[in-house]
Structure formats: C-alpha cells, structure tokens
Length: 335
Image (cartoon, rainbow, N blue to C red; front, side):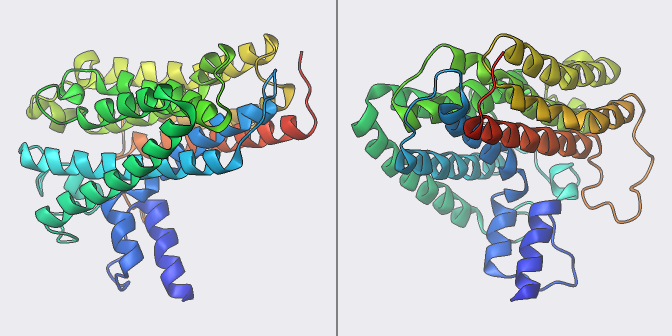
C-alpha cells in the first residue's frame, strides 16, 4: 500500500509516474485528469469558503454546501483538463512531438485511455457536476447556475471550436476570471447565500497567481505554439515581454494583498503570504533568464521550465494565504 500511495504522491507532484513503477488505477486517473494542478483549484475554493469566516463582515458558513462546491469545482477542473486534451488532439494540436506529449503522458497518445473512454469520462464527470449544480441551484437560485455555466463556457471554449479562446490570446484572461471571480466569489456565494461587493476584490490576488502559472506554461510552449499558429498572449507579446509581464503579475499578488489589508478587506494575518517573498525573488530571477539548454538532473516535466517555477510560488503563497485566513477566522485583526 505504501508503494501505491507513493505512486499517487509522485503523480501529483510531477504529473508523471516513473517507468519502473507499476501503474495502478488511481494513478492512471490522476494522470488522465492532470491532478497535479488541482491544488490551485482547491486553494481558490478554500479562499472562497474561508472568506465567509475571516472576512470583514463574517457570515454563516453552510458546511454541506461548501463541501459540495469544493467537490464541484475539483470535478469541473478534471473535466476541463480532459476536454482540453480531447479537443487539442482532435484539432491536430497535440501529437507525440508537441510539448503536451513530452512533459507528461497524454491520456490518449500514451494509451492511458481510448478516445471513446475519454469522452465517456468527460460525460460522467459533468453529469455528477450537473447533479451538484441542480441541488445548489434549488437552494440558492439562478446565481449558482450563472457562476457554473460561465465557468463551463470558458473551460469548454478555451480550446473547443469555434471560439478557441487560447488561440486568440484570451486564455490567460479566461483563467483569471475562472480561478478568481467565478471560483472564489462563486464558492463564497454557494457556501453562504450572500455576495457582498468586497468578495469580488478579495478574489483578485489568487487569480493573479494562477494566471502567472499559465503565462509560464505558454512561454515554455511559445516556439511550438508559434509554429502551429496558436496565438496565446506570450506568442502575441513575444518571449521577453511575456516573461516581464509574468514577473509584474507575481509582484502584483503581494501588492494586492497589501492593499486589501490596508483597506480592511483582508485581515492582518493574511500578510503571512509575504513569507513567500524569498521564493518570489528566486522565481523572478529565473524568469529574467533564458531556460537551460537541457533538463537538469532528475527534472520531471521537461521541456516545461518557467511554469514549474511559477507553480512553486503559487503553491507557497496560496498556502500561506490560506493559513492567514484561518488565523484571521480564529483571531480577527483588521486595520
């Protein structure tokens, strides 16, 4: 059992399973759904729920509804990842020589699942999410459906025709909207039945961090995306400018947290997130330089480079923000 759990930890940490490890069913599905990036969704949902307890105007948190929202957004993220892989393969973007099939196993190209099996999995996950949506809409009304369907629209048309948002430089703004206002404010509303204006502002800092991860990934894929005519924002902006904007966004997270503390939206304890500043400085330095010519020893997701560094900052700063919100729920301090 210990070896199986080790497999799960390796997949979640690296989005890969070493060739000397035996594939188990859970690891297979963690790879198919790209569970390594679920921590970002978990953090957004936790921020949304904790704001009910740690915000400037604490309200009643309905734990059952919060749990449903948490499960719902994680399933939605899983469905989104599978949808992206399906449409990128169907649209001729993903292949064995494209970045997606190099840094981690593609569900279909690697033989983890058939094309029909992936479609079935997408349908089943969305059916479970639909059941959660129907129940929560019956409790709180149409705003729940508005949040969920807006997120579904952006997720599906991120790569699906005819919009293909990623191909038009709209993928990064879409991710900002989904992981910030929709996910954080939506979880708050589902968990409380209320939506005060300050929640929208409180959703911005972590949304910025998640956006830096996508910027990093698209900088890594810039040459391959350019060759395929995929106009992500880094392709439109160019390599150096895209890396500079990534650095600005990373700093902006800390600026936004500080401003929210000064205006009384966040409690003082959320300044714990500034404990990630040493990591910020390291990541900014990495983004200021070209990537190495080859993978460092033991590096698991080559040829991706910048995205891994952005993710480490997002994971640390997001985790410290969660700790700050918990502390503020226990012992609130506001300016």
